[in-house]
Length: 215
Image (cartoon, rainbow, N blue to C red; front, side, top):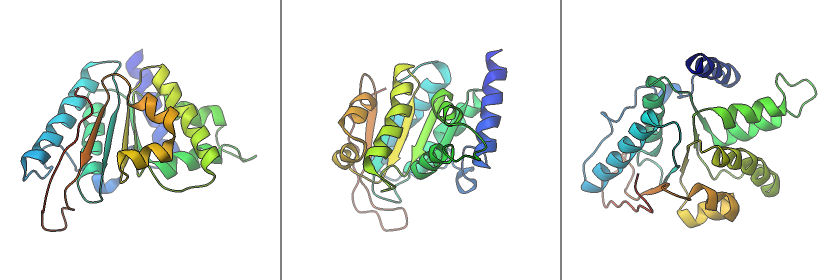
C-alpha cells in the first residue's frame, strides 16, 4: 500500500540521518507559534500555510523558495510545513544543503553503508524535500551543481515539490545553483518569498515580502 511505502521510506530516511526529518531545535515550531508583528510577516505566514495545505491535499505541487537574512523565521516556516506534511501521512525530509551533499558523497566510499542510487533515491523519492542553508560553499562548484542537478531535476520531472531555504538573495541563489536548476525550480506556480526584515533577536525595523507567483 502507498501509506506503508511512505512510512518505510520515512523510517529509512531517518535512519540514514540519525534523527527525524526536523532537527530537535525546531520540532516545536508550528504556524501557530510563528511570530507575526507586521502585515508583511502575516502575508509570508499565509503563503506558507496555503502551500502546506496544498501539499497535504495534492500528490503533485510546485516549489517554494524562502530567501532572506538570518533570524527572520525561514527555517521555522519550513519546519512547520514539514510537520504538516508528516501529519497528513505523507513522507517528508528536512536537511541542510551540506547534509545532502555529504550524504551523496559518503556513498562513494568503498565501505559505504548505502549506494549512490540509494542516497539519490532518498532525496528524490520523498514526497516533499526541504533543504536549508542553501548557499554554503562546499567543495567544487561544478561537482556540487552536478549532484544538485541530478536530485532537483529528478524531482522536477516527477512533479515532486521541493522547498529551498537560503540566506542568499534571489540573484545570489541563481549564481550558486546555476541557471538550469533555478529555471526548473521557478517554473509554473512556484513561489519565492523574500523575508526582508530584521532578525527576531533584534528590534524590528522594516519588513517586506516579494512574491514571484502565488499558490
